[in-house]
Image 1 (cartoon, rainbow, N blue to C red):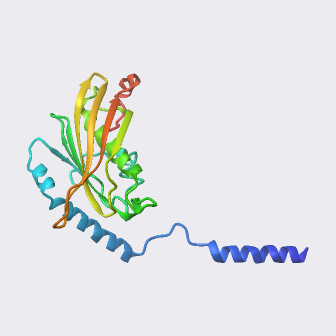
Image 2: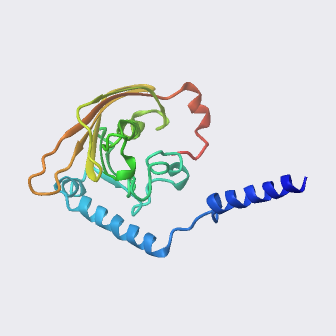
Image 3: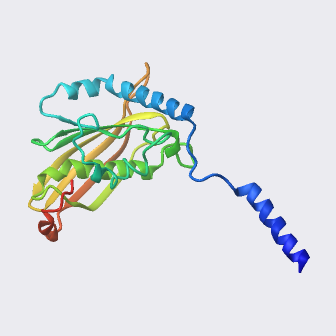
Length: 224
């Protein structure tokens, strides 16, 4: 009996020494500082692109980012790109959106970190699909009666694999709008950053966005 107890204690000790750790782990301040610096570099990189500066000076487009506080905090947690995919080595910065409500067009900038890569070392197609899903839907919301809806169908054609560290722009536009149904097309293309870089089309999406009938009964709920 004593031997069994001793063995159990010994087993616990070995397991604890191998697997035990303080929870939750807090990143060292130096790591957080490095991430903040990298985030600033990514933001500066995006804001220095020709595409960004063209949109920031176009009165038809409204900039939707954290600085302008246009997106309610309660809605951000429900977005995959601002939740699961956010953070160091992932999207790094929250997607920067430019919305043209009148014409039904959207432009969204994102940085694809190495943590979003698949086994082949390239950005996972699931990440690209998610960006296209959220981007095309966001583009179409304004055309729905309640300004809210869900994806009824999303088809994606992949043209190339994005490299980790790529800066991309998502371009979406409403191609059909009738009642509770909106059809949106969208593309994701890399943005040339360094001399010699060439813009490359990564994927094209065709999205059907619908507003369920019961949504009209939730107009009083403060959702985005």
